[in-house]
Each structure stands twice: as C-alpha cells, then as structure tokens.
Figure 1: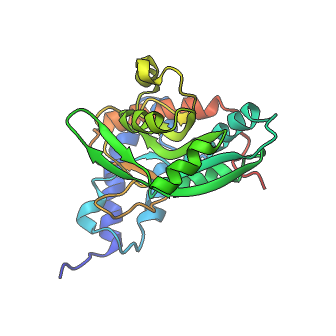
Figure 2 (figure 1 turned 90 degrees about the horizontal axis):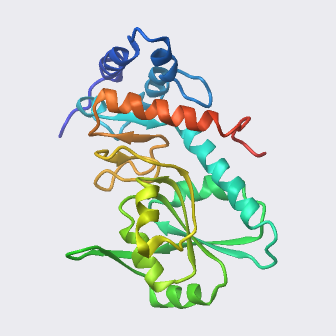
Length: 262
C-alpha cells in the first residue's frame, strides 16, 4: 500500500513551484496570478484546495496546473446564462436542456440556477465509439426519440474538444443547440461546413492546444471529476500564465459584479 505523505511537504513544494511564476519583473505578471473574480492569490487557492486531500499523492500534486478557478468557471456560467436568457426571452414553451453524463453535471448545476426562461432539465448517458475518422455518439433509443420530438433542445457539456461529438449529435438531432463552459477552438468549429448552422452558447474559447484537462467535470482515469477547479497536467508554466492572462482579460470584460444570483 502506498503511504500518503504529509500535506505540509506537498504544499511547500507546490508553492515554491508557483513562486517561480509569480517572481516576474512585470507588475502585470504578478497581478495575473490571482483569481480574476475574487482577487485571491492562486497559491492560496491551491493551498486550501490540496490541504488534507485523500485523493491525490504528495508526488502527484506538483503536476497539476491551475487553469481556471471555480469562481472563474462560475463567472463564465453566469455570462453564458445571460446570453441564453436573452436568446430565449420570448419562448412560450419550455426549452429542453440535456446535460451529458457524466462530465456536465457540475457545469449544468451552475448554469441552470441563473436561467430565467422556462426549461426542463434532463441528464442523459451516451455511449461514444471512436472510428477511423470521428467519434460517434449513441443515444438510448427512447431518449433520442423524445429529443427529436422537442422543439427546442440545448445540449450541455462542460468542454467541447474537436467538435466530432457535436457533429455526431447534430446528425441525429438536426435542431440541437450546444452549450459549453469551454470550447477548445470555436472559430475552427464554426468554419467547418457541418457546423455552420449550429447555435453555440459557450463561456470561453480558445483553450491551449496541448492541454490535458482535469477537474470541473473532467476525469483523470475515472478520478477527480468533482474537483471544483479546472486543472491541466501537460502545459508549461509560461503556457499556463499566458492562458490565465487571457482568461482574466475576458472575465474582466464581462462586467459581472459577483457570480451569485441569489
């Protein structure tokens, strides 16, 4: 049995690594290593998050790069909800929201509390099969039949990667719309002929090309799906810093005063 090390050692090593990012001559660089919503330093967020956790080893902590804090993800959800509220402000029948299991559960819960139009929320488990060219998504026959009969259907997923999943779903439900917190490259998806007519609501794009995301609904070999923050395990420190600077500028432009509706 592997023995988990004391958190204090893990914390010190992790914060030492983060300090190498913060020790920048640029004042702007130092300012960006905070949560763009709360202003709390990233090192403090990580210290609190990883303290006394039983689902990560001391030797593993250092590999996790914080890309987006939970509060930043909530801000993106609020902004997406505002745009959906405006789009559906005149609907008279409930919009059918379909969250894909398992990853979308966390994002769906953040999004829906800020929606003000009538809707019904459903959680659907789909199967994915990777062929030679693209990924195919298979719905339960009963679920698919019901969705085809609905007038307005919005598919909720926490992260849109290549767009193959969207294409597979759109082939089965022609009138489907997409809602996601993060999209790897929305511009590239829009340029594809198959996606030109698909309405998309999303929080932020683009994501780093070589990232490997964990947390906020995305699992790590079945684990850590429920981690509140969005992490990466492949990017360099400079790539993480560059992404967080872009994300902070984006969130600043949203003009969201707080992220809680109630």
